Image 1 (cartoon, one colour):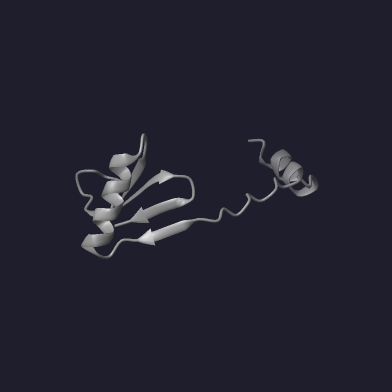
Image 2: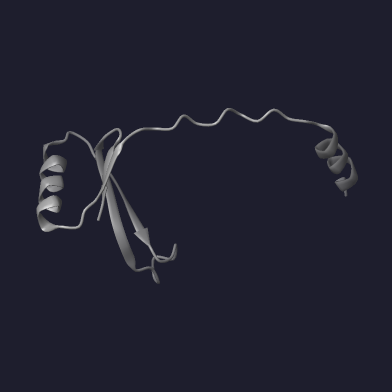
Length: 81
């Protein structure tokens, strides 16, 4: 419909890209032992707040299988199980 006009706008206009996000330094741990998991559980229990996320094989909850869980209780420190 207005494709030619849009192409002209895209081809002719050089839009300035936003600056890249700053790289965040952090400590990220892959939990592979029961002792490390226990230590993280204690950190999470002591924290006022924490976040977690799941990784699955699908976005469809009826078909998805759990692959892993990640969590953090302070900026720049997180764990993946």
